[in-house]
Length: 525
Ligand SMILES: Cc1cc2nc3c(=O)[nH]c(=O)nc-3n(C[C@H](O)[C@H](O)[C@H](O)COP(=O)(O)OP(=O)(O)OC[C@H]3O[C@@H](n4cnc5c(N)ncnc54)[C@H](O)[C@@H]3O)c2cc1C
View 1 (cartoon, rainbow, N blue to C red):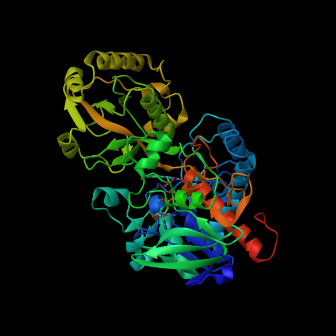
View 2 (cartoon, rainbow, N blue to C red):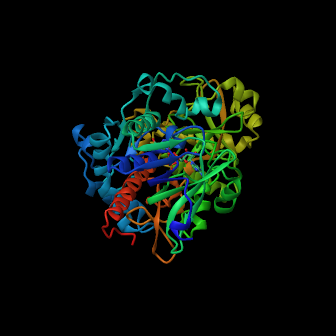
View 3 (cartoon, rainbow, N blue to C red):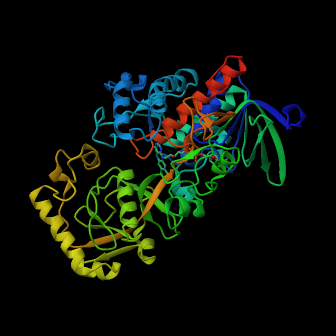
C-alpha cells in the first residue's frame, strides 16, 4: 500500500519499540536532534531486563575512564574485541561499535545530562588490550524523590519483581538508575510520547518494501503510527519463548532465564522476520549459572568465592571462577555431552553457611531446603545421598580438589590464575582462590544454566539498519539490543557489552534517520 493511502492514527519522526537501555538511548538521540518520538512499551513498566541489570556499560576509551585515570583507548578496546569475536560478525560493525562508543558516552553525559562514573569490574578474557579492572561506566545513582510518580513506572529490581521481596527503592542504582534517568530526560524534553501497555504488533511496509509505520495494540484497541524517519526495534530477545529456546538452543525450558518474565516471547524476532530481515546468532545467549528458586525461576549467580560446582556425575567440569558467560557455556557443553541439566554448587561452612557467590536475591536456606534445592549434611556421604550424586565420584572430586587446595594450584582448571576470578575473592594469588572443602558442614545448592537474555536477531548494518539476506537494508527499519544479532558474536567480552552495544547502535540509527530526513543520502538508500 502507498503511504498516502494509509490512514494513520498518529505520526512521529521516530518510533521506538521497547524501553530498555537501547530503546531509550535511541529515543534520547532523536529528541536531542529535534525529532518527535513515540516509545511503545508492551509491559506495564519501562526498562525491560535493562532495569534489572547492574548498569555496567562497556565503551572502551571513553572520557569518563580518562577522567578517572583509567589508561584506555578505542584502539586498545578494538584489539581486545577483535581478538575475541574474530570474523563471527562483520569487522566494520565491530569497528563502528568501538569507535562510536566514546561519542555515545559524551552524548549521554554532556547532552542528556546523565552523570557517569567508572566502577571497577574486570574484562572477561585474557587477550591483548584487556583491562583487569575493566572499562565500564555507570549512571550515577538517583534519589526516588527526583522521580516522583514516575518511580512506579520503572520496572522494579529482580528481588521485588521476580521473587516478591520487599526492596528499598529510595535510591536507584545500576540499571534502575539508567532507566530512571533516561525516562526523566525524555519527559523533560517535551518531544517524546511514552506509552506503557502498548504492544507493537506489526511493521507496516509500503509498496517498495520500506517500513513506514507500526500497528500497535493497547488492550483491545488497535491503532497505527506513522514513522516518518524510521522505527527502532529494541524489544529484547526471545528468552521467555520456550518453543524458540528449544528449537534454536535445545534448552529444556525458558523459565531459567534471569531476564524479566513479562514480554520476552520474541515479538521482535517475529516482526523482523515478517518483513524479510536476515537473522543470525539465534543459538546464542548471554549465558550464566543461575540458582534455582522454589518458584521455578532462577537467579543470576556470579563471583564464586569458594566451593566447587559439579554436574550430575559428581565431577567438576570447569574453573568455577570463570566469568559467568564462560561458565554458562561450560554448563551448556556438559548438557550437550549428555551430563543432564542438574548442577550442584557444593561448599562448606568455613566461611559461614551462605552461598559463597553473588546471587540476586540471596537464596533463603529454609525455603530452598524445603523445596529440595538446598541440602545440608555433616559428611560428603550424606550430601551425596541427599542430592542423588554418586558418593564415590563426589568424594573423589572433593579429595582431588582438596589436593589442589594444599598445593595451591588447580591442575585441572587453573582456578585463581586469572584476574577475573581473583577480583571477587580479593585474592593476590591462585592459592587464595582454592580454599579447602573440609568444614564441619557441607551444603549443596541446585544450579541451572541461565542467561541474561538471548543475543540473536536481525543482522544490522553499521548504521543499525536491518539487513536482508542479500545484504541490502530495509529502509526505515533499525534494530538494537537483543532484538539484533549482537556485534559480539559468540563471546561476551566484558561487563556491559549488552547495554553498551545496544545504546551505540540505537544512537547510530537515529543519526542515519536524521541524515535521511535532512535529504542527505545516508546509508540506507
Ligand atoms: C541480573 C542481570 C544483570 C545484568 N547486568 C548487566 C550489566 O551490568 N550490563 C549489561 O550490559 N548487561 C547486563 N545484563 C544484561 C542486559 O540487562 C540485557 O541483555 C539488556 O538489558 C537487554 O536490553 P534490550 O534493550 O535488548 O532489552 P530489554 O531491556 O529487555 O528491553 C526490551 C523491552 O521491550 C519490551 N517489548 C517486548 N516486546 C514488545 C512489543 N511487542 N511491543 C513493545 N514493547 C515490547 C519489553 O517489555 C522490554 O521492556 C544483566 C541482566 C540481568 C538479568
